[in-house]
Every structure is written in C-alpha cells, then in structure tokens.
Image (cartoon, rainbow, N blue to C red):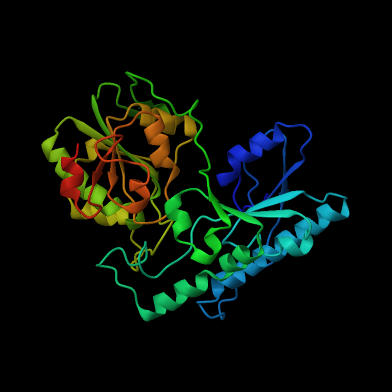
Length: 356
C-alpha cells in the first residue's frame, strides 16, 4: 500500500489484511506517526520539491513525479530483499503510484481514485462569486495528468461514492468500483443522554441542552464555513440557550487561501455578531474526544461544495446525529431529505438555520 499519509483511507483494509498471518502487509508512507498491528511501515522521501521556476501548471505534476520516484526507490529496496507483492494498492493523484507497474509488473495494481478535476460542473465553478479565469481552467486540466497515468496503468480502481466515480472520464469508469472506505460503527455509535465535557480544552457543556456541532479539516469555503458562521449568528439570536462547537483547524485544506493572509475564521467572526461565550472552537481533536462531541450533538451541520464527501458526514450519521446538510450532489447521495437528515441550500444561512 502507498499513501503519503498514514493510514488515511486504507485504515480498515490494511488492518483487515494484517489480521491474516498468511499476509505480509507493507505500507509506504511519508508519515512517521501512527501504527497498525501487523502493518509494516516503510518510508520514502522525495529528494526535492518542484522547482520555483517550473511553470505553475506543471508544478503539481513535477511533485507527483518526484513522489513516484521516491516510492520506486523504496520499492527497489523491498525487491532486493526478496519481497514481491501480489497486490499493490495506492492513492492516485499525488504521484506515489506512478511507477508501480514498472517496479512490480506482475502485481495486480489497484488505485484509490478520490477525485478527478473539472473546471466546470463540480467544485471549481460552484460559487458564482468566485469565477474562474482561463488560467485556472488550463491549470485544472493539467492537474489531472498523474491521475490519467494511473487510470491507464492500473488493473482496477475504487472510488468511495458514485458521485466521485462520476467525475472520472467515462471511458475509464468501467475500471472503477464504488466502495466506501468504511466507518467503524462499533466506535461511532449513539450514546443517549451524553453530556459534553472536554477537559483538555476547558470546555464543560454538561449543563447545556442545545448543542450544534460542525466538524472540518479546515475552516474554509469548500466546506461552507462562511455560510455556517452566518447561520450561527442567526441561530444565536433565535436560540439564546444554544451553544455551538466547531471541531477543526483554522486553515485551508482545499481551495484558495485569502490573499491578505487572514483566515476565514477571522474574517467571518469580524463580519457577523457572534456571542463568543456560546461558540467553542476545539481545534483538532483525537477520535475519542471528537466522538464525545458528536454523541452530545443536538444538530450537526455538514456543508460541502460538490466535491469529495467527508468521513465526518457518515460518522455523524452513525453516531445518531440529526444532520443538516447542504443540498449538493455528494450529500444527496447519502441523505434523503426528511428521512435520514435535513437538506438546505449551501448558499442560504437562513435556510440552514431554519431547518433546525
């Protein structure tokens, strides 16, 4: 297996394979953090990053080639020790998988296909206030270069949702099965009457009956953070006893950063009246504390552009949360309005607030 992060989307499959003592499981990664029983971590490191003088359309491709080269060298060392895999499974897009068929031509090569980029019809042109330039369109087209190589080279592929598979060129979709990464439903399960106390963050909401939650990797437009904060401002006026808990980091994981160096959190908290005593930013949380947040939630808000579906939506549903989600394609694949959740217009903080 190969992924710059560990264990990322391969957590459950790696653990399941490693439980069988007849399997040898090696996981190539750049991350030294974390471990899984029976999974042998091996490390790779690109010798450099893309050069600044490289054309900005091509810089992601150069980085992908450098990643692929580092994985190739790592695989050479395994091969020299006599290890030849039956199956190699890697995450397409960043480059680690580019040369797998060259180093292990007899192995079955499987790819995790998370996303194929389009200038129009999905995430990039979703916000009418954030129009694309011709330069953006050209850059997005070239961004698919390493993914196209993997689509050609792989024996089979996998996407976690039908929406995500739909983004790939139709001539390659026959290679791709749909199967989600998986959610541990023994861990993410309801706990009726749960009260929220996070001692590590000095947060004690055990006396609070109304808790609205939101979880994200980064507080950014791709995950509807600006609309969420505006909805919080409206909700706090309407529900004087409601508290809001935001799990995630004050950064941009997807999309563009603000040109002035400010964060979207700073901008939105300056723009809308928010009772700071009733909104709690936890930052990143370990899974055990994140679970406590979801189990105590009265309503969980999940917003996304038409993009990759977050684990947090399924985790919150498994935990029994009432989810208010955006009426966008990836969410609508999972939530049927009024049946297992509520849907609202991504761009309407008023409707997001009203659905609760």
